[in-house]
Image (cartoon, rainbow, N blue to C red; front, side):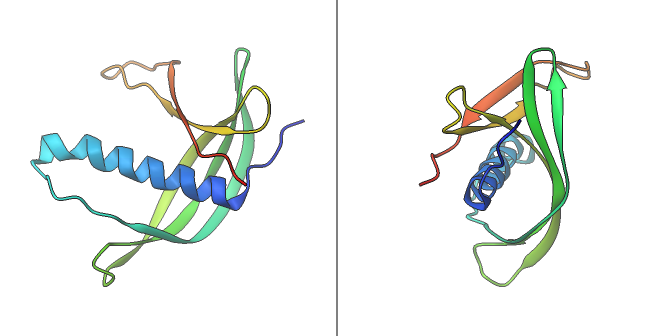
Length: 117
């Protein structure tokens, strides 16, 4: 049986995923301005357990409203999110598939999320 992460955990995971994506685009696009977007109106359309060997992930698909730091521009943004529950079932990690230059990788990078209180 798999626990369900709280809404706060999902929002933290999405915020981290947006930040990681933003950081990965800075270099190639020559974009160095820091943007502090806010995530609002989380809508989950699909949730399922995803197993890879002995690893278990929760997969979420849906959309959210992304409000840019200028407060004027809001975008409905689709997302896919993988979470892995901590070993002691007290925390969660954002899981992102490792991109190995076009190869279909089964390796994952795990990013710890703040513990929900």
